[in-house]
Image 1 (spheres, rainbow, N blue to C red):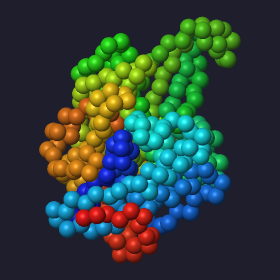
Image 2 (image 1 turned 180 degrees about the horizontal axis):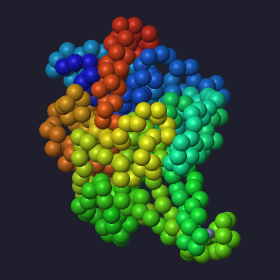
Image 3 (image 1 turned 90 degrees about the vertical axis):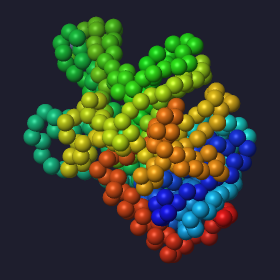
Image 4 (image 1 turned 45 degrees about the vertical axis):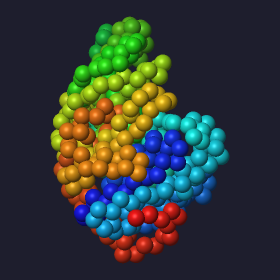
Length: 381
Ligand SMILES: [Zn+2]
């Protein structure tokens, strides 16, 4: 067993499997290792998410600081983080989760990452450099400018590493003039075909079907066009204009009436190509174009109903898949992981994975050599 494949369980503190799978998935996500293993982050003093960030840094380091003997089945007690998580929710007045309650893992990821962002953000100055050679590059400028408007006052490594952006074009059917806007997202949320049908409990779909549905053209009947000053039909087209190196993808398994849509969604775990849903042939945000082809590195599965379910997480560490079920971890064949009713998937850009993992490995080695933070909850071997 090498450093990267350290498997360590988390004690269940009473309906906390939703939080355990989220913590496991986040601590295995290379950008968060880069942020939290390398140096102690001083939270922004005005942020009401300070203690969440401090507790997160402690638990991420606790996960990685121990060298484990082969065959060890260690369990970490996440009570320090759990307490800070509950206090943050209570003290911030973010009334979405109560102690002892089962909660939604996607909402939890969003809450933790938004909280870390809040405790870390800084004002930045963003410049657009280079010259425009064609209409596509003209559009790049608009995508970057919109990004600046959203984030220049509040920028963080969370935004840099996890946020994507969608381009929305509204095309007037009368004069064909296109009006464009851009919006950022933290998680890519995709619907399931037929997921809005009442009593739909099974499906057999591909991720391609889900993305086709998410990015299908919509039509507007009463669009007020600024160009031709008429009111009439228009077409809305959504495409992805920015893809981060790590994507957190959520399959909308819960209908508006909180009914669960079960069943498998199939895709190529080794390499999934997002090019059909991209706005541009190039990349406005990176000088060097790298195709948006992604490898799936972790999957979160929810079993049961909305409130009464259980969560498990599957992660690929050094070519081996592991199943994380609270304090219980086991090696599983890849088919077991990919055969689950995935709810949330973590994907990494294929040709950046190796360098991201290598960097994380350096951080882990440096952490173990220095151990600068005293653990709050020590791992019990
Ligand atoms: Zn028009």
